[in-house]
Image (cartoon, rainbow, N blue to C red):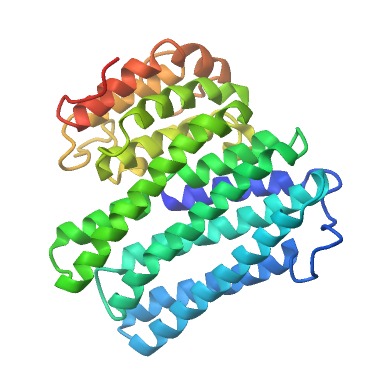
Length: 360
């Protein structure tokens, strides 16, 4: 899925958390700066600096780019620290829910910053500073995912499925950073010194997504809404059995499938998607044309993977390939996937890995 749609999904879940009753007060022991409002202010500043960073790089303004990079990183880190303090001082359901709100806002900003940094690292000014900023940003996002996960048991029962979905979306619902870094390396235009930094960042970003998948599979899955536990369990169970060997195209595909399953939830995608969610899903997930698009070419280097994913998505909804303009039911998700998702994922990974998928 595109970064935009994933961000919208995460913020939609945040709205649902905010709507929970009795979540407006913060822990009494927390300093006034450790509030949801303070975190939102830092994130707004970071987001503004991130946008200015992109513009400065595009215009070749090195000094401006460096200044905005420092601001974006500083404000993102401040937001994260405040949110983490709220989590550490939370003493009940109300303060825990507030901490979850703050962590979601801070985590989403880290994700936006990470996408921006990895997209800019192969072009323009400040390449060294941008490259060096990637690993700390990956680590900051991973820390938020860990703390959100540890916070789950103390949340109100009505909030746990929502926050579990946030964790899943942040950790395993998008792999833009991995794809960006892989493209930068394969482009062959990086200076030697920066190429080494980017290669290391790619390894760390890949490991972070794999670790998040394992964490979700072991600790978060039982708290997700019941209608997505089966499909996600099938996907994550298969993928986490072969961590350490996943290439970027596989990770991108799998995270896209995770996102498409999460998109069926009412508080993320507005209900099981019809043409709006699935009509252009394949092209949106993998950066190419849907196989149903007249003249579509699909994704270079992946061969017939679109047919496999089309079949997979069709099976997720209890029938044939997803058809634009139709509305699959939630019941179809559950009934259609439980008996077939593991074999389909095996086929998917086998195709991407040249027939070397995991044993079933």
